[in-house]
Length: 62
Image (cartoon, rainbow, N blue to C red):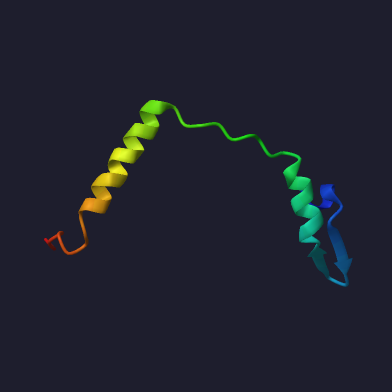
């Protein structure tokens, strides 16, 4: 992919990649973000609340 972007420079036996050029190339393929469906968002929020209510000290070793 880096060679397709024109970001590869060969120096002796090494190949260098210009990350600025490569990142601009990758931005062409960026897809817009979409919000999560409400049922998934609610599930994740409830799990997050459960995690904040417990601490590592509440858990006992087997």
